[in-house]
Length: 417
Ligand SMILES: Cc1cc2nc3c(=O)[nH]c(=O)nc-3n(C[C@H](O)[C@H](O)[C@H](O)COP(=O)(O)OP(=O)(O)OC[C@H]3O[C@@H](n4cnc5c(N)ncnc54)[C@H](O)[C@@H]3O)c2cc1C
Image (cartoon, rainbow, N blue to C red):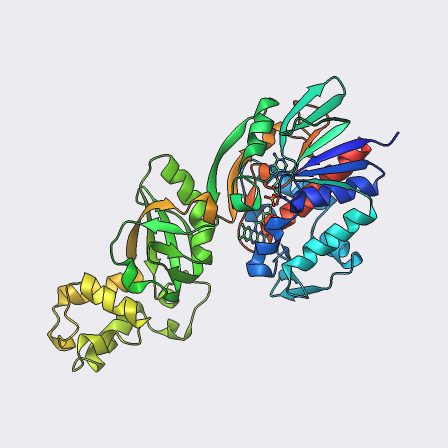
């Protein structure tokens, strides 16, 4: 008789696991609590689905599963992922290493997976939420909230984490794993915006500008990112902020002081990788020349053109300088204060955005308790894939690649076990 496998959760990782297990002859059933599979995929990459990245490796991931990345990706990495989707008919677009379906439609990724599941005759039970999994000798009994019970030879838990709960992943998978004896690393929102203390944000909401931002915990710098910073009416957002948000979330959870130092003139930064046209001049020389050349101007005119004007005007206010004041009349002390704000403006972080607005969930099932094929070391025949595991990647296709790779490795292993 074929091996009977239940996949709990029809997201990216669950669908990939189901395809791989079914291709190896297993009889596969997906349980999905939503009325359809793959809801989250549709909102990825702003609807275009950045499904992978040519630059791949453990360095782009966090969590207790970081050490597993290279082993898993050797078995099923980017090359295998590209081949997999191309063989399903999906053309691929490479935008500076970021991979998308050429159709620029996230629905393409979902469609080709759905067609393959159909071809392989994988059973899909939608609107069926799994409420318990019981392990008895060599059998796993899966029960839904409607009290339907079914026996399987193996179970692949693919319920996701807690991020974007509207798409179905509300953390119930953690409870299922906990009841089976697994440890859960505390979950926090990641790849999300930071909500800050200051009261000026409404004045600058909507501004986007190039910046280098440094996350500081208890006053010590821990990590920096450069990119487009977005000012919102409650704090800061944008890719560089997303990349630092998981470290901020854990520090806030531990009750530590979290601040972000913003450098709006990063081209003057000696360590900057992205040096602009101004790099032949030092920061000090840049300001000295500006005060000398534009001394007759009002301070509103003086700050115009340094960065976005709303930010310039905010910095004037924070330095106690009137917009109508003539530049040459500004004291040395106020000048220094203003210059410093442009390269070292520190904001106080109160909290991250919630799981509702997070792209990914950091934390999850402790990866020390899973094998190299993502099988539980506690319950044989139980596998974990995707975001439910304590592994999260940075922005840029890394989380979906983890879903494809983990799903493939565990799906094959569950079928071949
Ligand atoms: C807005 C947004 C944009 C994103 N953009 C990108 C991007 O461009 N590139 C990238 O790499 N990553 C992106 N991500 C992250 C990526 O989408 C996820 O990491 C990935 O989809 C996780 O896949 P998963 O299968 O592990 O979990 P999920 O996609 O969360 O799937 C879990 C499934 O399990 C179901 N489920 C949960 N509990 C139960 C239960 N008890 N019984 C039955 N079913 C259950 C859920 O309904 C859900 O369908 C984005 C995320 C969001 C929210």
